[in-house]
Length: 155
Image 1: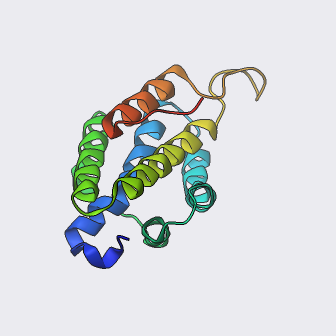
Image 2: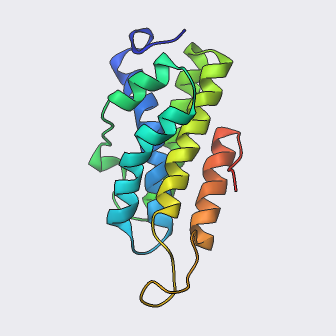
Image 3: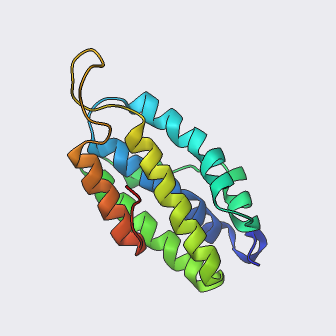
């Protein structure tokens, strides 16, 4: 059983930032809804955590507030690259120390965070009528996140 104590401060920061990078990548993919999507990411930490079963590691990740250094992303164009690199670093760090089951739970949790951000705001339509739950750019961002993590996105 892996816990926060198994990581140094830099490693733990990378692991905690992974789900946040995933959510930010989705938010940057679509236009509009940023506040709703950001709030959804916060809520999903609790809800997604409940869906993952028993995991002291995920409990500690959820209780550790993530923060991203502002200098990592200087422009919106950097978000995809920075998010992909952040997810890769988080996954590599976790794979070096955690069990395969814990790594899979982390991947699932991270995708859940991104999916909640994508579904938080309808894209398109007029005055809340019509539109789509998840835009094509958001779907592409979700697919990219899943590919980076070596997992899939539930439809």
